[in-house]
Image 1 (cartoon, rainbow over the protein chains, first blue to last red):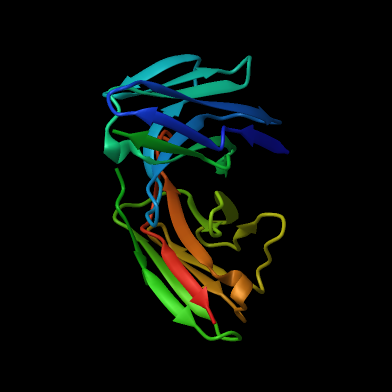
Image 2: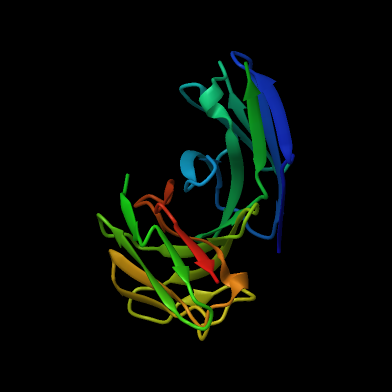
Length: 108
Length: 114
């Protein structure tokens, strides 16, 4: 089976940096995805990691350590529109298993 | 990136009826998936839609309740059968990109069963 853990909620202020952690235990691993989901909308793809290290994409970066079963999503220069749920998902074969999501609230 | 069109976007249905949700991708994709997201919850995989063969269902989901079709590499349907209020949820289709490094979602179908 698979177990994916993320914090339930986080708060941060506009302009700051926030790191959302995700730990996983899985019998197979074929990549880790991060998604952003605003209330009432479908998830939006943010990043994909399959090798150890940091992937940077504008204000968003994602890190993976396969030996530790650990990933984080780093959001820089936070904006109000970044208030959303952030979902970590692990792929085994072709399917994705999602964590429960981290609700990020950005305040002025 | 593939564009996924899903319809209907929302519906209100009577219990005991069935609803079919359609998902169209603008390019051929190997894998398509159907997820459910119950209120306040994360996404749960219902099944993998296989082209030309029966769908592969996850534990807790059965073909009689959620029949799936995938007649070609760009289209799939999910039917929610004999609905009850517990089926009220958002249903999402997803694909896996050509190089398996991206996975995109349709806009979702918000289903309310009354």
